[in-house]
Image (cartoon, rainbow, N blue to C red):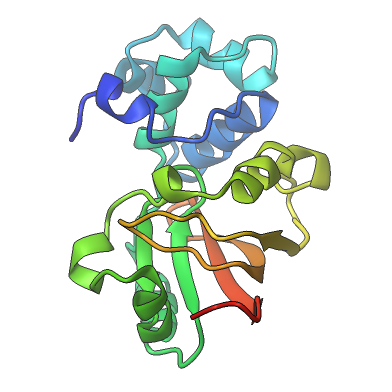
Length: 199
């Protein structure tokens, strides 16, 4: 596992009570006590309790540690089937961990859009390649109820990211949040329409 310092800059910088609520849900599904979560995160049980209640906001390093601890995995048959459906989709679609933006599954069309092979990008965070519009949308997720029990789908419009490493074309796309079997969350991203100027 990468060091916390190494991953801080590769994650969205979003603080707030939703991370504590997500931690409580994740911990509850695992039947994990706050004291054990605190041991894993290097903090006290009281700190975990204050995060989960919203009385305390974790700092950037603590947020990175929480996100790494709760990052989405494809642990069950149902989770793996979701990834298989994404991988075999004929449309431009991909699945990422909702907290870390680590790529979990990618269709062949999206792979062509990225300009990188599946093997090169699977398991890496796409956050460093996010466009300004994607970063702005990420910062408003809590305002749209994204972290509530029944989050809405969100439609986002972005300009191209101009990255030579992983391309994002100017387009309109949809975000949908799924809870996986381990209590973590994944985000399905599918393109609705490309800008006419797409090569």
